[in-house]
Image (cartoon, rainbow, N blue to C red; front, top):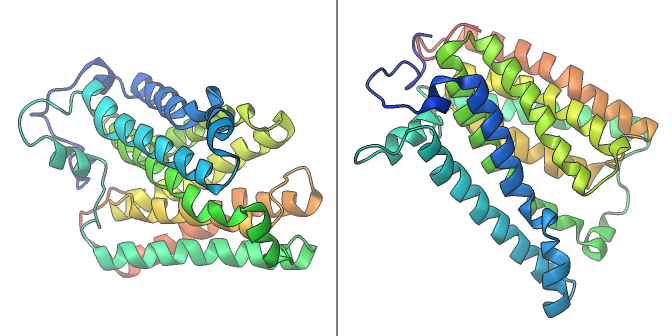
Length: 291
């Protein structure tokens, strides 16, 4: 696909996983899932709480542990498995492969990020207010520590996006057309959330998996159009924060289900149409592949 940063390099040594993007994508899904859910697998918080008490400090420790695991997985283990660590100075090219930059048009990248968050916020607040699902007692945030989501949301917002919309999407685009790459990465991103069964029941997790896959289509489109993972990272972070702080995140509830449905279907459609129109009005040449 012409014009995509580092997606057509032929001088780069790759491993078997790098040469087989579907198998590589499955490996990314499994390894990222284990890394980011390891604290829940080993009951990290309860074990630490026995020593220091169940309070915010435990959550900070858990956050730090998951951040380190995410960094080691995405910035060390995965590049090694995919053959990006050969030779000196590999880290810079690897970050460019992840598209961890502002893209060829940083102003467009910033605009697209703002548009995505605005669409998301408008849908959520409008439907939440209309259905009565909008959280009314903001004072309760300090009581149940839900405010801590603004910190916790950094973990999936950064590491999941670098893994899925960064490494996985870039690898898939080397072999497949952009839409195939976006849909494949979105499907796997939805399946990735099955690990949440460690925390919640299937009646909550399965709708979350569908929601993640649907929204991921919009995020993948943002990355393809801007050649930057930043819009998807910003959008992912804000949707996690907004869902937790603005609405009752229970997909079994009819009001919340309506909001989840709008995010799953209406959000990606509005995002794709709007970004397509903006990109067409302000093209950036060959900076992105047709999508």
